[in-house]
Length: 271
Length: 291
Image (cartoon, rainbow over all chains, first blue to last red; front, top):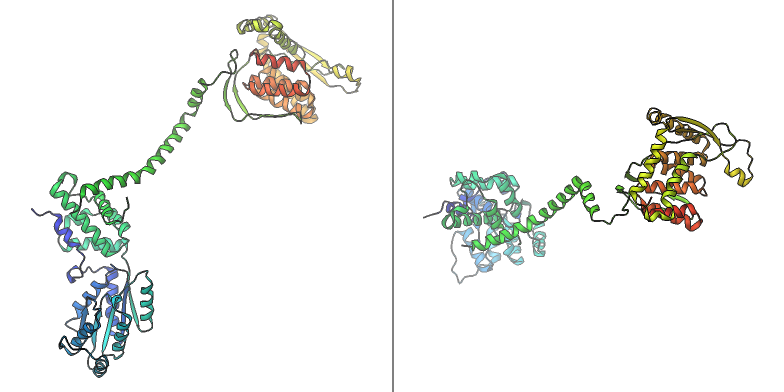
């Protein structure tokens, strides 16, 4: 027998699938800003924000929306191997695969891109760009200088020193920055409710009141990934009780106790 | 799947940790509230377990805020406020003089009567006389006075200092002593007695004379107004710290107000500097619990 909380739990699996994209007020603004930047004759655009603020899903959403309209390509997984990365770029530009034992001549590639200037406008979305080495980033910049390829780079905002270096590296070259932030308490409320309602889980959505959201927000600080993790754990505990000890839960009421238990589990509360 | 039972245990521990400060805070608050609402009862209960100062006179101290300080060097008395519940038996005998040139004593007859009472208690056989017997004697004396219903006014003036100091001041202090021994007239005309005190009080306001203050102290002591007698004894003592009477009235008032410890300290301090038989006698009475 499947628990009623099973689909609710799955709603909050962390993914960047387009179906999971929730159009919140703040994310719509970021999306429009990014879309507008792409239209501009910019070489590089930086999407900047802490992990879990929705950078990946924003890039994916942009890609899915524009893939039939523009020459747009999404590199979800960073390629740390330079040879592999330029094989991918080569394929984007020429739409042809290179034999695996062949190496791309970078200067030839740049020259080829220069020839494409004005003829094609290729957009490459690079997620997790903090994984690329400084040398590779320099080559990416040289490619973007050809004006044939426009790079949208998603970069994690952390407190680490390399993050500052990376930011400085891009500052002189990037013309536009789209910064994503953690959601407000209203954003989190909309996010949770919209996610549940999207899967027609009305009863559960209605049982989550604003003070429950307040508690969730207190633990996750409005971070969407942390919110997903917390709600996933909450519904997993609910699922356990429903299958093993049903009298401990009230299906009409959302439990503060279970929120706190999940927070303990995820380390938001230190006992 | 997680170990939900372990999680539950951790959650209970977290809730205890979270609520413990609130429980402590509420407990302290309720203790304060209970104390504020029942402090009188608590004081009384505590008092039951404390040793009694006196086994003859039952004086209920309502609150003694602070032990008084006695400044012997300055020969002045500084006493903190006390509240006392005790009404002493009183006979109202006051004198005031207007004309005569000889001052006898501010309160002559009543004083004699009091002295009589004191002597009857303070004699050598004092220790064998019990409280009831002493009270009976006082009652008899009161009855004697009440049997003679009358009111007389005597004039008196200062005489003691003249003989001792050879002082022949042209203006001698005069007192009007109103002796009221009529029970009925006492009730009817008690306001007159207070009038006398208020006249002296008015005069004191102009003269600031220590004898006026002493008169008021003695008068109020006779009236059983021990708070006031204490106050005026202090004023008198401030004006003339050599005045033995002011020390004695102050100590007696303190004792009547239930502050035996303070009264004894005052007398001891006075005796230390002045060999006063009266003070010694009074102190002995207080120490034996006969006052």
